[in-house]
Amino acid sequence: MPSDIEWPELAASLVLVAVAVALSMVRSLRLERTILWASARAAVQLLLVGFALEAVFDRTIAWSWAWVFAMVAFAADTVRRRAPEVPGVMMLSLVAFGAAAVVTLGVLFGLSVFPLEPQTLIPLAGMMVGNAMTATVLVARRVLEELRDKRDEVEARLALGLPSAEAAQPYVRAALRTALIPQIETTKSVGLVFLPGAMTGLILAGVDPLDAVRVQIAVMYLVLGSVATTVTIVGLGVQRRLFTADHRLTVPARPAD
Amino acid sequence: MTADVFSFEHVSVGDDAGHWRLHEAVGAIPDCGVTAIVGPSGSGKSTLLRCCNRLEAVSRGVVRFRGVDVATIEPLSLRRRVGMVFQRPTPFAGTGRDNLRVAAPDLSDDQAADLLAEVRLDASFLDRDAMRLSGGEAQRLCLARSLAAEPEVLLMGEVTSSVDPGTRVALEELARTCAGRGVRVLWVTHDFAQARRIAEHALVVLAGRIAHAAAVADLETDAPPDVRAFLREGSDAE
Image 1 (spheres, one colour):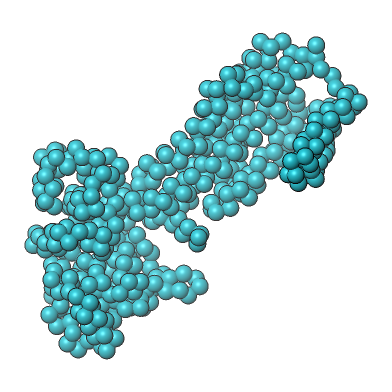
Image 2: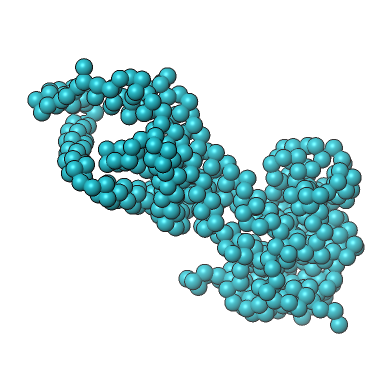
């Protein structure tokens, strides 16, 4: 039976927050205020998003595209804040998210995997950007760290007359693998270890499980494709930013301990 | 008169905050076998060396390689003509053969074995894992790797600083052997006694400038007081 939670039912679920608060009190964790604040904040944020989505879904698809652009901009800014030591990472993220959107959404809508409408565009773009953002932060940091830690080796390659892209290749490859492997592992274990969000949501909303699974598989491939695209673009982009045109490595020194 | 191998015309390297690693360095590396660049730690001798193959960009002044401003030479071809061995051994992942082929992709096994023989490593090192070599073995492999590119000049950062005494002697002899074959060697060291053993000429670098330059035999004659004090300290430390 599809779940259709009304306000009283939602209020009833607050009992679970009370359980968390009670446990914190009993064990003297002193997390009661934090738990209450987090729960309230999540509710308010999601309700605002819900109202906003309702408003956007009722309008033309241009509004949905505007929503997608805002998500991309917000994600790029988040990457900049989480990896401030990486030069030019915000611009690179914007380019990478844009390219990933063109590739993945282009395939999903171009091949009519999903119909292009606000109800599909915004959630799919959200999945894509959310996952790509995490991988972007990881790869940007890894490329910087690899080139900083292996600075001597990279410079030894440069000193043999190798161009910077070739000198950096083994280290950037390692960074790209590190950033992609978690996504591949998640893809492998899906369904066995956990039920992914899109599928769970659809089943809760009363959709036939096999239909939900088909949607989930398409979403998973979307995430894999977008993560691979963004990781590659950001990885190679950061690498380019760390060398000068005359093939010198300009990795900033490690911050003092 | 033969052109100097390198000349430094008021070379400064530093940041915008005015912290200079080299400041107004003036001097030249003559066209002779081994030239030692001598100075205490942090004096700027490694920076001077890195300016020669453009791993370091000069902030001011000009570095010339055989009379030509290095800034006008394509950096990758400059680096193939001017090889470098670093202070710490920098083996790459893979076998000895893999390492040599980074410098010379078409190298045959016979040529690779010859290169190893030049640095006194036997042919079994072709198949050895380069990351598992001792410091001395790795440093010799790095020297062979640099020689694989057939450079005209070899820049050697303090290559004996992290190796055992036996390897130190071997590397010193190898520098002399390279010089004997016409490869010009720039040898960085803080050890004046070592400079005396292997070099014909020496530049003394103190506090970011070239404080003195002369034939090694005459280095102490006419040296300014700060250079003389440094050389004496080096000799006392022996």
